[in-house]
Image 1 (cartoon, helix red, strand yellow):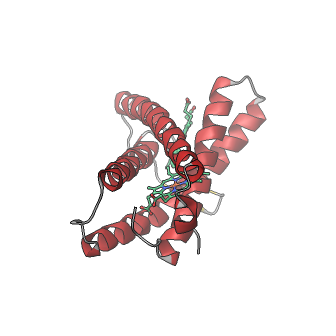
Image 2: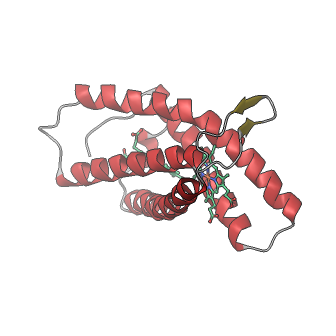
Image 3: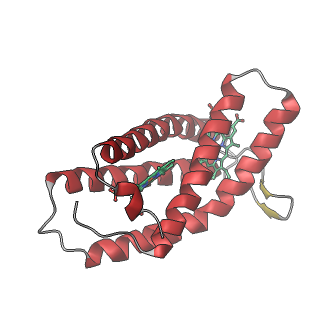
Amino acid sequence: MRRIGYSPGRVLLHWLSAGVILWALLSGFYVSVVDVLPQTKDWVGFVNVSVTALFIPVFVVRIYLVVIHSCAEDATNKTLMDHVACLMHKFIYTVTSVVLVTGILMMDRAVNIFDLILIPQPLEDPTWIDRFFTVHVWSCVVLLILVALHISAVIKHEMCGRRVLKRMTF
Ligand code: HEM
Ligand code: HEM
C-alpha cells in the first residue's frame, strides 16, 4: 500500500457516491422487506428514483476520473493486496453500473426527477420490464454484499494500523 492518497475530485465523488448508494440500498430494501405505510413506500420510491437518476452523470464522471488516473498509475510496484483491492473496486463499479442501467430500464412509468424533469419510460414490453426488475433487485443484493465487504476491509486495515481512511480524505 504505497499510494499517498486520492485526488480531491475522487475523494468528493467517493463520499457523494457512498452516501447515495448506501441510502438507496438501505432505504430501498427497508421499504420492500418491512411492512411500512403506502405513503412511506411512495415517498422513498419518489426520492430514490430522483436521487439515483441524478446520480448517473456523477457516476459517469467518477468512472472517467478512475480511468484517467489508473492509466497514469505505475502498475509494476503493486503488491498482491493492491491488486486485490483494485479488482474489488472494479467489481463495485461494474455492479453499480448494472444497478443504474437496470433501474432505468425496469421503469414502468416516466422517470420523475423531483417533479422538475420527466424522462419518458424507456421500454413498453412488460416481460422485459419484469426481467430488468429481477436483475435490478439481484444486482442490488450483490452490491450490498460488496459494500459490506468493502467497509469491513477498511475497518480491518485501520485496526491493523494501515491508515487507508486517511487516503480518502482531503
Ligand atoms: C445507486 C443506484 C441504485 C440503488 C443502490 C438502488 C437500490 C434499490 C433497492 C435496494 C430497491 C428495492 C428492491 C426490492 O424491491 O427488493 C430498489 C427498487 C427500485 N429502484 Fe433502484 N436503485 C438504484 C438505482 C435506480 C435507478 C437509476 C432507478 C430509476 C431511475 C431505480 C428505480 C427503482 C424503482 C422504481 C424501484 C421500486 C421497485 C418496486 O418495488 O416497485 N433505481 N432500488
Ligand atoms: C462508510 C462507508 C465507507 C467507507 C468508510 C469507505 C472507505 C473507503 C476508503 C478508505 C477507500 C480507500 C481504500 C484504498 O485506497 O485502499 C475507499 C475506496 C473506494 N470505495 Fe469506499 N468507503 C465507504 C463506502 C463506499 C461505498 C458505499 C462504495 C460504493 C458502493 C464505495 C466504493 C469505493 C471504491 C470504488 C473505492 C476505490 C477508490 C476510487 O476508485 O475512487 N465505498 N473507500
